[in-house]
Image (cartoon, rainbow, N blue to C red):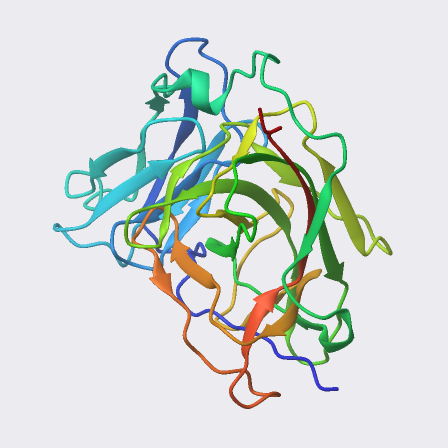
Length: 301
């Protein structure tokens, strides 16, 4: 089977004559530098990430006086900064303090252990294993996959398994990638809504390892009656220089086929949009990340 690859033309890369914005992103309370923060143009597919030490460098050569920068990280309030005062300089510096979110901590972070759950976990998966195919996702994109709650009963997500595949292809630039794992409620429109966990879970794939099991038993990831969204965001590692107009990322997220479109995509903190593209390999079916997981449900009294 031929592999399907995605390419991107707009992810930022630095050039000799660029206007560069540099700085550090840090926690406004602890003052600690924040790693893998997403910095992207509002309503545009242009952006970058902070390094594992919180530093960033962003090319402003394509910015206009009307552009703004969205600076976001799971568990923090998104900050918007106008770029007009920075684009006239060859190099500018902007250090950014992000404020931690504190609302609804009892729902998102704290699990008091008083709720009683069934001991047997139920498994779920998004599609059939025999129809798996790897798909490259460009840096900066986040794909959220809807997981239906077939029992329509409250529970907790305790494990997620993700399948990745290393790829190589001649004459195309290939970049190693990390992935950020996040979880969202289903909002009133059926789109990804409020975050269910504020942990910054970064998957750093190792060569030859194809499956990653994320243990969430000590977390509190609510599995609502309406279901849940599990998302993967493609993160640029510090060692990668995303130059050139066409590239693929590796390892790829392995996808399966589903009867319905279950995924939503966004770049940075821009709006989600529903993926409604039919698979190139299976007519009338949709490409969906192959996710396997376990849920435990509340006991009946």
